Length: 176
Image 1: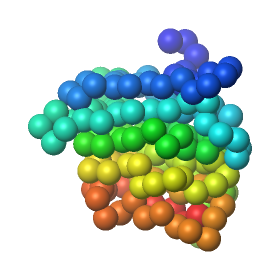
Image 2 (image 1 turned 45 degrees about the vertical axis):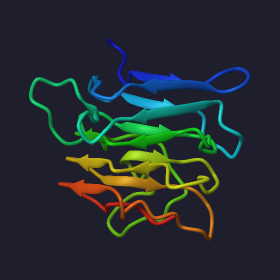
Image 3 (image 1 turned 90 degrees about the horizontal axis):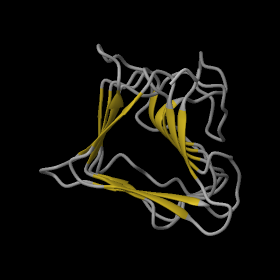
Image 4 (image 1 turned 60 degrees about the vertical axis):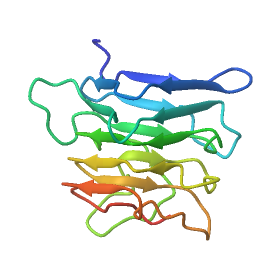
């Protein structure tokens, strides 16, 4: 608290640090906060992983800690380096994210927008994730995009088929 942009970083000096969140858990973020899996962006192997596998009956909720939540309250979940193959988000709900940041990604710039493609979930590592690691997840009330596919590759992993996007101000997913 007191930090202009509080954040939870998941990273290790060697190996891979893993944050595992159990089904039914709610994680609430202060204004401007972010959950960063590998806080540095680049094309290096991941030093962090996120396993957030809820169930249909007990989803994991990532939300705003504000008394009256609103779109863009917090920045969202960010993957900075290559996504670790163990990372997985299933049966989760990411809400009130997509807040303003100063970070760029490799995704295409959309008309009437700056190069910054803020989103509820941002994949900013310089290469394609190994799989569609976000499934059965609802992204709602994002102030910008749903998922920022900010990697550089001719392969465009599609996150639309198994996920739900509700009240997302920008695109459901950006174009890498």
